Image 1 (cartoon, rainbow, N blue to C red):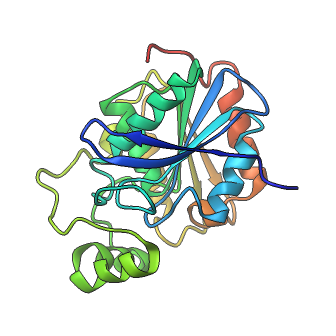
Image 2: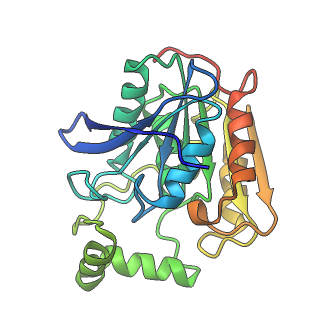
Length: 257
């Protein structure tokens, strides 16, 4: 089946960064907009992300975008800090094209951004965090040690730019941004769904449990047997279940933008 048609858009963040985005109109609920946020080094143009957008468009219109420093977006990646402004621009765009309810769905780094945005800026009616970290500086797995090399070392940043078109800021956080688990406690009363696989080789299940324990109701935790990490491991069935969760009464409740 061909993927649903998407329409490109250029967004502008409050700090002046140009964001490359795409809007896939809803094939389901015309009032629901879904913001799709990729993981570190990802892009809305990646085939896996486009397939996720296609499945989610059965439930609402999808605004997918490249975080700053990724793909065709401007700026430099701050790996989850200033990216909340990119999310804010995507939500504003969804509202501007007529969606009265907006849910955010983030994968990995995008999950951390979705939770932090809900805590710091608001404006979403439901939040879904898939394969997200609970805290910063985690190096307990080999993939995360490789991620930190790409972020912290000049050869790693060069490799990320050449191989993944990801441009990473060379300076460290100052101050250190609010951690995802700290932000999770501030998402309520907006519903929060945390999805994590028991085969995730980046972040073990302790991250999902830390996020869930810190969050307040309404909240749900799905531990997915055999599910690996983020977009590349997400099956159409899992994405459809997420779409149904967003669509159900009480999940994506309308709040003031």
